[in-house]
Length: 550
Image 1 (cartoon, rainbow, N blue to C red):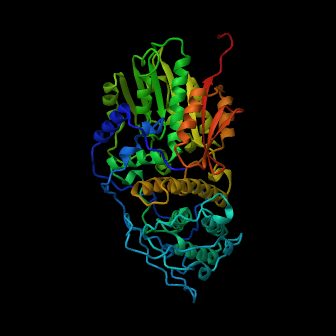
Image 2: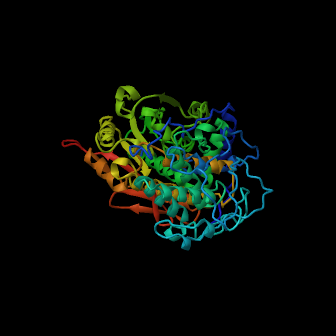
Image 3: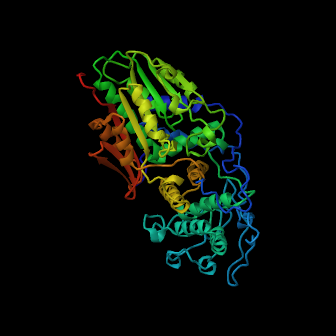
């Protein structure tokens, strides 16, 4: 399905102009998420580690021809980095009939002059144990250039496990690491190093990110740098990357669309149309979600609320864990929220922004968020709660109790709909394979979103998602468990209205036909699916009515 061109719209153009002119161009600071200190040289692995409507079709302005400045170093990933155990040979001999291994080259801007073909790997060569002869795999030297046919093989980019060869190497390698099988680990790392590419199809990219993650945890001193992430970009390019991603992928655009529609639905149900609106923003939209909502409020029957307040609970570096949570931390100097009041004023909305820095979620209360009587408080929690512990102590349930104590009119909960990958929900091998599964769905869908073309916006989004492989915090939980938790603390699911469902369905038509929306009547949730596999869920909740209340 091809992307449709947005029709001219004066309101959209107004927002586009404001967004393009609003962000300052500041120096970027490199943040290496892979530099977490030394690892015991005799230890193989630390097992404890474990907009609304596409922002009103704003992606049209994201396609600037100017190349952003990104702070990143050349990829030096190599199995030669594995120095933590003297029994591992950092330079294993090449098979006699194998071509010479290329030198790592991971330049930010691929050299179009390189015309070699990508390496090809046939899934039939890999058995369930991941055994693979390098001589059977390497057909030609891989190019780091941007080849038009680099993403041709749709068979490799499906949810058919037989075509997903990168997982068939990464997961057995993780198993071998857990078992301490040095020879097998060395062999699989060698094969991965031969096949990994940051500019190939989804399989090559997954192999590249997976190899980085495995070598990072195995190395006592890693010479490799992490991929380009949000924290290592300049603020202006960071915002442009978000807008471009919203244009080509519904990964976040869809949940944000549902969230904005849910807010409007709650407001429509309130008898007093003159109440102030207070939104508690616990999410990863970095502010780009709200211009669409503000513009929609101007069209509301009776006009916008007298005052709109947005309290932003910024991600905090609690125990340095949040740094590894994908999509939570923006670059230094990026402050999109401070520019929202100016935009709101231009469309005659009275907006106030309050930002809570370094404030743990569990410590929220009516005083800290500045709640006032008579206002309509709505909590918007998106893709942030899965980093809370859910075992002992059960921080997720405790935080939902905190939300209930705030007495909100509604809670919007959106999160990844995938199995938990924390160390408490399985061994290292199980956790790593689930993280690989999460990243595969992102890389596969993003490859389709960008139509296989290489771009710096694509690279920074994929690099941010790849942090899931090295994230030491909690990750993910299925929709059913989240719904159980919400009901357990006193919330009831609210069925999304027709406007919300129709709007989300219309938005999804803009994107690749492999995306689908599933309405779950049982849990009153709306799910986003990619090629028949769940990606995320969106839900609306209200406090249960107490006895004696009408």
